Length: 188
Image 1 (cartoon, one colour):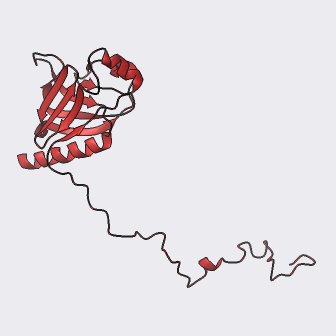
Image 2 (cartoon, rainbow, N blue to C red):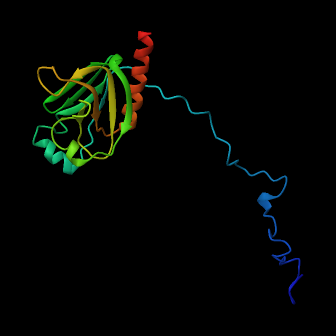
Image 3 (tube, rainbow, N blue to C red):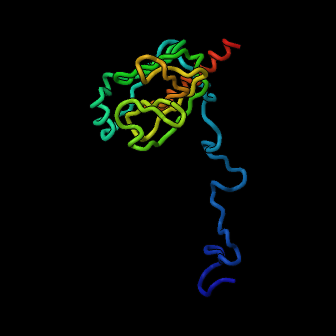
């Protein structure tokens, strides 16, 4: 049915033909110049990491950094180094070093409460883990096969895990997991 004064050819009735005319690009047999759903180029290669030590900087959040600086925690006194065989964390006066083979797992975590991260290294009373934090936003939680010393100078107190808040958490997690997996394969 058409309205008076209108041709059925130029303006199809939306009730009789709800789809309207088919656009040229959607007609049968048409092939666009670029297929949208098909990847271009070779498939991505799996992520690999060069051998040798890799350093990571802590991510400093101003409201946390001010309190940390009072205990010697600054960008110049902090850092994490993932070597081929060992993991080293420097955090002001505190230091943790362990073989990569001792790393059981690593995963991204956060956000954190300001009181639990601001200032010096923190000891968790719940699980004896140690936190080296300079931001409330995000970090990496590392668990160890054998607990390691870090927070007190005599090394009697040992920690089953450590948390670090780095600028590139995802890269750190990938690298440490990769090297820990390689170390585990070497142990087997």
